Image 1 (cartoon, rainbow, N blue to C red):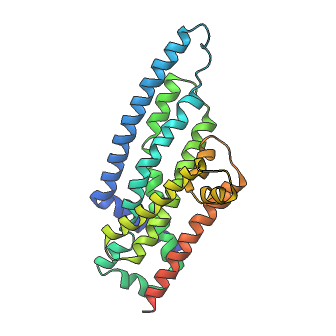
Image 2 (image 1 turned 180 degrees about the horizontal axis):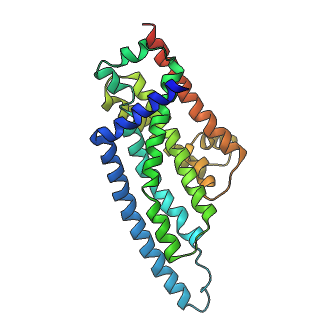
Length: 255
């Protein structure tokens, strides 16, 4: 456990020691802040119009008409940021010739993979924590349900954790960070497109294809609905890519 935490601290420190981590946080805050301000403005206008209407004064609900859409905008940003964060996890070590030293250490391949994964999850947690002022503004101007907000953050964290696991495997497969980014982004984009198959039909095949999409499982959780199938999906999805990464690192150790 000590070795895993040492690797996690090293990876987390690397994000703040290089411009990549700061650029991702600044870019995330810039884009999410723009969408947040735009949606707050739209919600204010619509709420005012409905309050003035004799037929819809009580129909606007911040928990249904605003908060889910704020988090939905984050998904597009995470689709780019997570592969960018994960592309350096192994590729950077290979480029700096420090990967051989890591493999020669007493740490097992599983400990190396878990440590690096905890490092990127720690950075994602810091990135999400930097958006808490959005929540403060919501409580200042409206009366949101804390449970809905927590569910939104949890869904985004699990979604980004899945994205990071895919990017981690791509980084272990190639020495080139750009190639790792393209591989992970392309695969995640395919998973994104699978969500659209829900409108193509209602048969078992289309349901199975739609189930494979990671977005369909995060949507229900973002609404505050935790289903067993979603928990199983995220656990299996992340576990599969971590296992595949561990096998790739293990094969590199014995080359």
